[in-house]
Image (cartoon, rainbow, N blue to C red; front, top):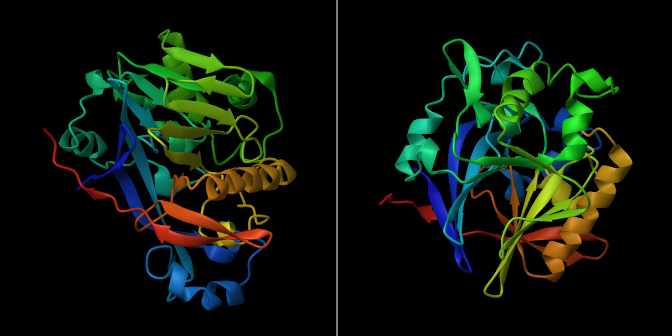
Length: 304
């Protein structure tokens, strides 16, 4: 069942696409070692790490925000039926995601805005679905919002050398280009982009050149949706640790520290894309690093 939390005047519902064991912790976060994962069992087990296999427990999910009368999706997972030769765990899926979205009270035609925090296979997949052998926009009335920097970086015609080129093969062609060709894309430029009075996108480069975080500020309450700035709570405790998927490691570390500092200093809920369990954390400073103070109380959603 979908889970919901109210943050000021904005409701936030998370709709799961996929959940399971993903990769060894020491491979997903190469700066870590086995001793670290064992030493942090209290924080990591069972929601974020499986000690029997050494694998990180992760998920793909979409956050449904209802703000100022609009329905906004944050990230769209891996999608069904996509050809993903270099990461088969996300290829040829049949997840029932649209059914779960409907159970949360959202039909594709109800969506006003789709935010892609960055252009990676597991964040843009449900931008499109297969119809009459063509990839077409899943949310026909929505504007699809992503950074122009990421659009240009991942567009293969531009010839950039990309660390994640193989993992993201076919992604641009089947999940990004069709929404652009349909005239539904808004590629924003600069450091920030305001969606409404409650929501602002802010560039946080490193994982990808155009990765953005979505800051929510409403009625004195705050949250920040950080996409892949974090893959595991291990990176809250050790913000200089990158994932193996970061395109620019130095900038990723800088962005991670900046956003964690803002969350801790502003009592803002930290909402990563892939955390298992309760998914969203309250963070505090511990010297030069950070710690998890608690987890957000999402509640079961009952669609109207």
